[in-house]
Length: 480
Ligand SMILES: Nc1ncnc2c1ncn2[C@@H]1O[C@H](COP(=O)(O)OP(=O)(O)O)[C@@H](O)[C@H]1O
Ligand SMILES: O=C(CO)[C@@H](O)[C@H](O)COP(=O)(O)O
Image (cartoon, rainbow, N blue to C red; front, side, top):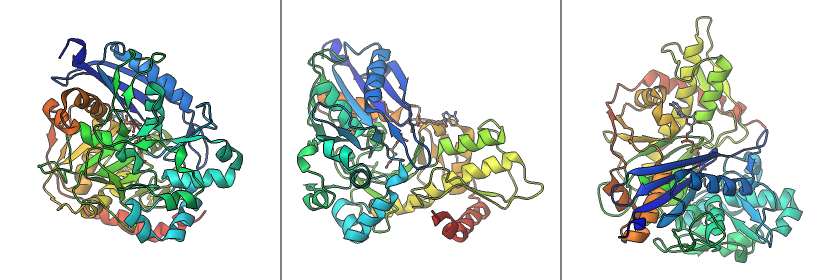
């Protein structure tokens, strides 16, 4: 390997920011880091961002690594599901509708009613919720038909950025599996016809390991730099943790990610097809599957409640019996897209710190409840003694770590590598150079190593209170 072939860059274009890491291919050492924020607009159920801003943020983050001109390969991972609509000149027709935009909830319900939940799960692995790209496209054709008519290309956030770097209209199986129009055999022509989307508008889904192309001369990278295919952010984090679905000890290892979204998932050998819709049957980026459950209200919802209470995010207090269902932005798991937040069981002696703790509990409970469903959907045995790999910004907070341990009764391991999505993308880029599988690269880099926090006794009373409140409040939370 030449001196310049030693550095790759992995990018995480997530909801709130673009983060880029320059990484040494041999050791996994992070040599440089760049970051640039995104703006998310929208009130009520709307959440949108300008794709041009992601591109500018990508340029800034790449420059921030200090290695943009010298990297041998680059890969971009991005927030899943977002609907990017481009005109014939490649300009955005309108802002991208993001994964957490729940205006498309009625369209998702209608799509499920038309085909049936079991058939959706059988074909695409998932029952679409408002998050899925197919529901967003259906919303666009119904509410902004001129924008839909002006659309000459439909992209996901990561493949939009990959195309800006290379000029190639390509995507990967991992991110494609979050659209609602991809099956293991390619695009589902019948579903596309049902939502009036011409397949010619979509990028080609390349086989795993095939590069997207090389950097064009007018971009932020040295012309000819190899660009990997990239993937969705959760798929990239799985790669970054060294998790593969192939034979080996990593299939079925549970991951809990605490970021803008909360996600719980595992790499599995079995293809998920959960007709209840709790588990999305995503594809792993290399092979096998990545059953996943996702919440809309995670770190940001808890931070918002801390701000309302005038407390630091870590200033929780034990005790009391208050319950918070922090569904501030509507919720996806459980599927209550029109829900708002709920506070129940307030007493004269309830403290602000207990209310904040209850918000953490409410956010973590939805994810932990889905954990067994995730493993079942992927056909992997649930091992209650296996530590949960805890990642995302929230994993850095003691209150989050303690809440997950108390409500699960399990140990948690917090990988030392902070930016697992960007590391996973870097592993994809490195794999282009070395011929390894990306997850093998990450294992060699020992990205999942980190402190283990021992299990504590499960707080059965808190879990029962949450489950009971959720059951009783459900009719209220379903009201529009
Ligand atoms: N030390 C910390 N304690 C608790 N939460 C934290 C800490 N640091 C960051 N966070 C939370 O992490 C979130 C960002 O997580 P991250 O995984 O980077 O987001 P994204 O999903 O957008 O990539 C912030 O919203 C913040 O609430
Ligand atoms: O919708 C999902 C998964 O299905 C989300 O996990 C998005 O992929 C957004 O990710 P972050 O910006 O929170 O990382």
